[in-house]
Amino acid sequence: MKKTTPVIQIQGLWAGYDSQPVLEDINLEVSQGDFIGLIGPNGGGKTTLLRTLIGLIEPMKGQISVMGSDAKKGRCHIGYVPQQVAFDREFPISVWDVVKMGRLGCRGTLKKVRREDEEIINNSLHQVEIADLAARSIGDLSVGQRQRVYIARALATIPQILLLDEPTASVDPQASANIYELLHKLNDTMTIIMVSHNMDAVSSHVKSIGCINRRLYYHGTKEITEEMVDAIYNCPIDLIAHGVPHRVLAPHIQSGGKNA
Image 1 (cartoon, one colour):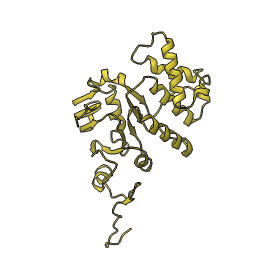
Image 2 (spheres, helix red, strand yellow; image 1 turned 120 degrees about the vertical axis):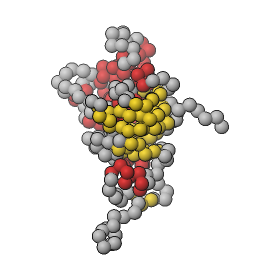
Image 3 (cartoon, rainbow, N blue to C red; image 1 turned 180 degrees about the vertical axis):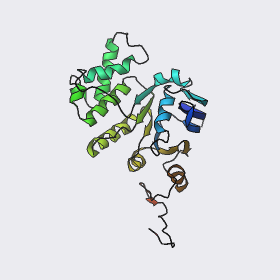
Image 4 (cartoon, rainbow, N blue to C red; image 1 turned 30 degrees about the vertical axis):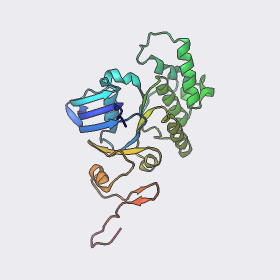
């Protein structure tokens, strides 16, 4: 079988802020249809990696290819849902107008919205099941509803790749379950990379898992090995991975040789 060209290819990437690297020697190939979950501690570089992939951070060293182009050109193939979206609750902007922003990204903000764009915006709202909220002010929505709006905005770019940074942060359990169900459906037509602190949710919903703490530990499977966890958290952790069969990593050992 002929091997397909990766939709994302990262080689020897170093990136960070103010000449201080946050990411060190990152290597990753992402194939079409992948659904990768990235976990790791705060400050480990998960968000930095996503921001570098869409060209917001210039690599210090290494190369990034997105759909055969560099990150800044390739970003037009990416839909991005950031972790924190600052907005003024009193500012009168509708759900429709927020999603419309997704149509302006690679075309320029001064371009007129065409009938084709309106159809794409409508389709994006329907995909995330919030078409009935189109005229509502985004400031009046719940956290879970706002997350769907931001996913719809990303979908309005007609992406081949979807990047999500903590898409269920501050969202109640039911809304989280609905978002993961939505992402499962979207993965039928696009490649997804999702950052999350929720190890249980990641292991339940993605196809493969990577651990990142400055360096990336990724083997293309859902297995989180003891070596990977020790490398990113620098301490022993009991971990239950969901699947058939369940797998439990070695327990903590107290002084004196007794299991915790």
